[in-house]
Length: 506
Image 1 (tube, one colour):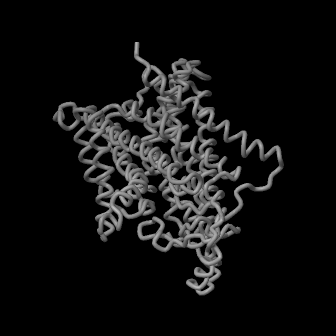
Image 2 (image 1 turned 60 degrees about the vertical axis):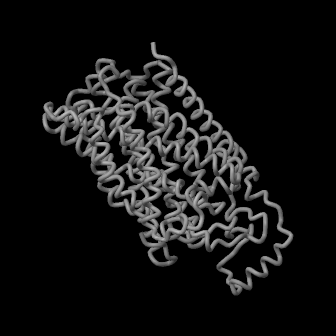
Image 3 (image 1 turned 90 degrees about the vertical axis):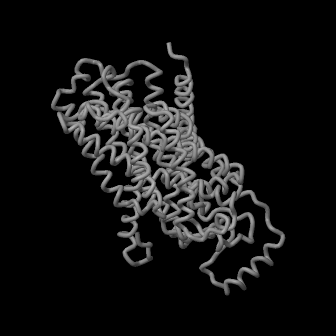
């Protein structure tokens, strides 16, 4: 994707950035998340599930906006560096741990679902198939597809290289949603007519909490969106802000349209067809096409799951790579070839996830519910709101650093080193390079900190104003009350889901 050049097709290039991000975000977040959606709708009721999915979608649009606004104002290229700018080393470490836990849980659940889909297709179409082909919820399929398709795609240097793969995957996704819609409509939506799919609500807090958890997992865009920000144009502070604005548009389009609308169609009509009694927590285990059609559908969805997992691993590797740099400084212990670094990183992420998936086959529902109730709650609700309040009330680390007594001397040295180039600005003023963040696209879409300029005038402050002037009531409602409601709602249902998951079954 070309860089935005001022005055030369800037608007067209901006929308190309938006559509590229939409394709990748849709591919990485909708893949395995769509399979339990009919089950999530069926156990809670039509109106209740619709209200939950709308609330979750709007909450995620809001928290995505908070993260991107914070990144643009602090100059952070990703989630981890935003955490460092706000709270320092330990805040960054805490954030990285939760990001990795969320993405690893997602990867494990996706690999398990891939095996389930393939095993179900083989058993239904080929009853006499050898046991090893479908046994243990498709163990053979997990091994083959992970090593033959997922691992090679994870070796791509940037997430944005998966743009065309994302466009192809979206076609499969929309075909699946269309098949579910027409199947339910042609059969008269029997579960909705009989009441097995409640018109309003099931009235069961357990079911509502589980639905909330599954739908929260379906919108975990934040941890996919922020690594993508580091791969977008950041050659100047203004370009970085435009990239954040483009990614904000892309996240809203993805959450409300390509993801949210697809989820609602699949969930509502899938539940209308099979109801709470007969619906499976994996929609592929229900019959949607006659004869060989089910087999073909399952194979295509299995393929879609294969190509939807690599973006998640790329996002995982974004954080794990920084850990490896800390453990093995000087470029992974002297390794200079980028593909070798990617190979080492993928061996540290893909193989452990595959091993856990092989150890617990058929447990995708439990894995995804637990992931949604823990990692998603932290990364999609709690941390974005916490960072927002720290920046809004001026308590962020980058806004509290003391003035360097040698600032004037360092500033003079910097001016001499740059030849008085005014295009390289530092300090706490508007449109400055904040806390020494580099605005260039590094070799593999990550910031090149070898060229980072340490800010000589501390506190570095922000590149742009975070707290915009608003009417007092609007300010209180939008900047204070709404974030509290978002994090409170997310926390309540996440705790409820965890209690229910670990509650002994009768």
